[in-house]
Length: 401
Image 1 (cartoon, rainbow, N blue to C red):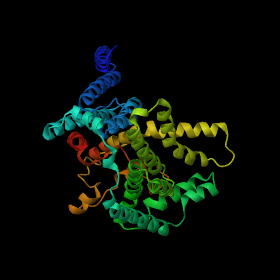
Image 2: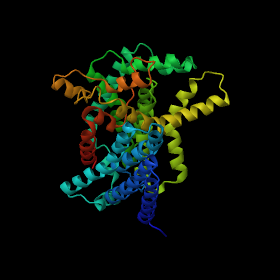
Image 3: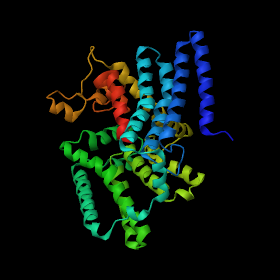
Image 4: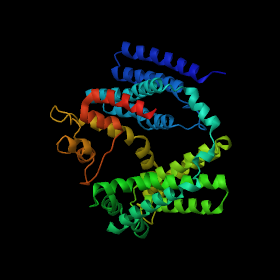
């Protein structure tokens, strides 16, 4: 039986041969594609030597990031490259390759500094005890404090909302523009202090998922029903708060966080049915929101359009938007030099430049407050050029490990 590494080596040799044939026939674009596939194979082998990236039962942060980037950015980037072949697209592909090569390099450097080995990660999963995740009795005050903070932030957010977009969606399906404006007004353009927006983001992305997992872990260890009820309450509050703005990402991320926690807990009992059901749950809310935009008279074509739109949003736009950054910048020969980073621009006395909004207005338009957020290499390039991409991905890999 062939090992994964042997399969990758064979694929790598085939890609090198294909690259040579393409170059010999002066098919530069296809030569770059084959070189990219070659780099992808090398990256996979390197990452495999650093972390258990092929084990669904041993989920790590580096592996999760790697496959999200590989599937949602790297693979569709080849389509984007061929559609926009030129100098900007070549720099764009180099930026993609930088993530595939410099992130593992940064991880390896961190492992050398921390004297960490791949088998140390595997040992952690073998020796894991869920008592460590449970909430000890003496930490109840900490639990109550975090819960109280989350509730205060949620109530404050609800009190300043002009309307609840989630309720408007169910009352008036079919008004896509109205929903888009309500979503923007409920968070992005909401007139609240900057620190409150951070707290709102942390509450729906970190605090409620953390409280839910702590309650569930404590229930599994103590078998006390009160912790089961509390975990269900945290799920309800977390889903409600994540969904009120109609933004699809917060709900999907909340559900994904709980699913990953479930996978870690029941790693030895995972089945293909469980995995496919979990994926369906993650995408269920984004599909529902898109589906309701068509109104009450839903045709088969509307369902198909919703599915295709969701597919495009998840597996094409994530690669297309970073390319826009490489095409637009530098502006008049100059990169931003850190102006897109709010805190840094204030410390340096520079005027803040809203990169995502600028890119959105150029390539999409139609919504003054819209944002075209890209994978982190887009912002690195806009601020510091290719040197920023290389050093930034290396540093990111170090932090990731």
